[in-house]
Length: 79
Ligand SMILES: [Zn+2]
Image (cartoon, rainbow, N blue to C red):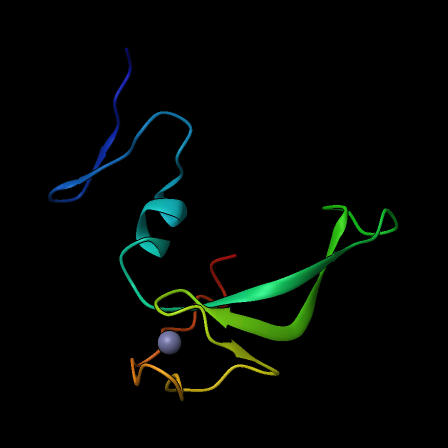
Protein backbone atom coordinates (compact mmCIF):
# COMPACT_ATOMS: atom_id res chain seq x y z
CA UNK A 1 0.00 0.00 0.00
CA UNK A 2 1.32 3.38 -1.00
CA UNK A 3 1.52 6.10 1.61
CA UNK A 4 2.54 9.63 0.95
CA UNK A 5 3.99 11.75 3.70
CA UNK A 6 3.97 15.50 3.31
CA UNK A 7 6.16 17.59 5.53
CA UNK A 8 6.29 16.69 9.19
CA UNK A 9 3.68 14.45 10.64
CA UNK A 10 1.01 14.94 8.05
CA UNK A 11 0.11 11.57 6.69
CA UNK A 12 -2.32 11.16 3.91
CA UNK A 13 -4.82 8.39 3.86
CA UNK A 14 -5.56 6.67 0.64
CA UNK A 15 -7.54 8.93 -1.64
CA UNK A 16 -6.96 11.97 0.54
CA UNK A 17 -5.29 15.01 -0.97
CA UNK A 18 -2.99 17.37 0.89
CA UNK A 19 -5.78 19.93 0.83
CA UNK A 20 -8.25 17.49 2.35
CA UNK A 21 -5.80 16.69 5.11
CA UNK A 22 -5.29 20.38 5.84
CA UNK A 23 -8.99 21.16 5.75
CA UNK A 24 -9.58 18.78 8.63
CA UNK A 25 -7.04 20.59 10.78
CA UNK A 26 -8.07 24.23 10.45
CA UNK A 27 -11.42 25.92 11.08
CA UNK A 28 -12.83 27.08 7.79
CA UNK A 29 -16.04 27.83 5.97
CA UNK A 30 -17.58 25.06 3.98
CA UNK A 31 -19.42 26.69 1.16
CA UNK A 32 -22.88 25.72 0.11
CA UNK A 33 -22.94 24.23 -3.32
CA UNK A 34 -25.56 23.83 -5.94
CA UNK A 35 -25.50 21.27 -8.68
CA UNK A 36 -25.16 22.81 -12.10
CA UNK A 37 -24.07 20.73 -15.00
CA UNK A 38 -23.00 23.82 -16.94
CA UNK A 39 -20.03 24.21 -14.63
CA UNK A 40 -16.85 22.20 -15.04
CA UNK A 41 -17.04 20.61 -11.61
CA UNK A 42 -20.76 20.10 -11.86
CA UNK A 43 -21.31 22.34 -8.84
CA UNK A 44 -21.53 26.06 -8.16
CA UNK A 45 -20.20 27.55 -4.92
CA UNK A 46 -22.74 29.75 -3.20
CA UNK A 47 -22.00 32.68 -0.82
CA UNK A 48 -23.60 30.85 2.09
CA UNK A 49 -21.29 28.69 4.16
CA UNK A 50 -21.10 26.49 7.23
CA UNK A 51 -18.51 26.57 10.02
CA UNK A 52 -16.37 23.43 9.96
CA UNK A 53 -16.07 23.57 13.75
CA UNK A 54 -19.59 24.09 15.07
CA UNK A 55 -21.81 23.79 12.03
CA UNK A 56 -23.07 27.38 12.25
CA UNK A 57 -24.50 28.54 8.96
CA UNK A 58 -23.65 32.03 7.75
CA UNK A 59 -24.91 33.88 4.70
CA UNK A 60 -21.34 34.81 3.82
CA UNK A 61 -17.74 34.24 4.97
CA UNK A 62 -16.66 36.06 8.11
CA UNK A 63 -13.19 36.36 9.65
CA UNK A 64 -14.40 34.88 12.91
CA UNK A 65 -17.26 32.46 13.39
CA UNK A 66 -20.03 34.37 15.24
CA UNK A 67 -21.13 31.18 16.96
CA UNK A 68 -17.99 29.45 18.23
CA UNK A 69 -15.57 32.40 17.95
CA UNK A 70 -12.91 30.49 16.04
CA UNK A 71 -10.75 32.43 13.63
CA UNK A 72 -11.57 31.14 10.23
CA UNK A 73 -8.87 30.36 7.72
CA UNK A 74 -9.58 31.23 4.18
CA UNK A 75 -8.74 28.34 1.93
CA UNK A 76 -9.26 30.50 -1.10
CA UNK A 77 -6.51 30.34 -3.65
CA UNK A 78 -5.70 26.73 -2.98
CA UNK A 79 -8.93 25.32 -4.23
ZN1 LIG B 1 -18.21 27.98 14.41
